Length: 107
Image (tube, rainbow, N blue to C red; front, side, top):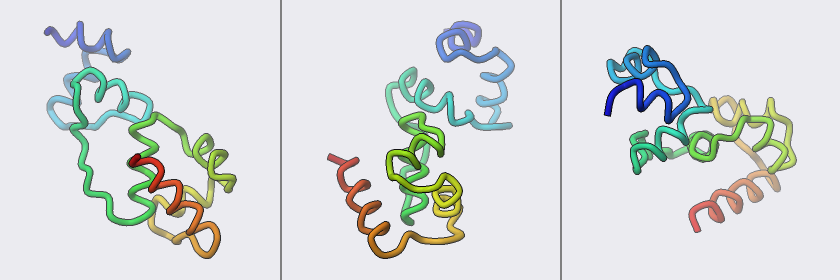
């Protein structure tokens, strides 16, 4: 396929495809699910170990912004962002809720 065809399918410019191919930049969140769909597999690392990394990985695959996932978890988007960056970890009931959420995602 030509870059212009791939770009049209994903919804980006041919320059964007070139930059991705040359590893100058990676796809932004809103295009990751489209890239996975186009390729037929997930080219992004699945080595998430921390709760924050797992949440971020899930969010990227599902094309969710922080606000949407925060609403699903009934938490503040700022808190979710700090979890993803590893600044803080969920505690108590929130930790249980997030762990349950992550377990249900893999089913």
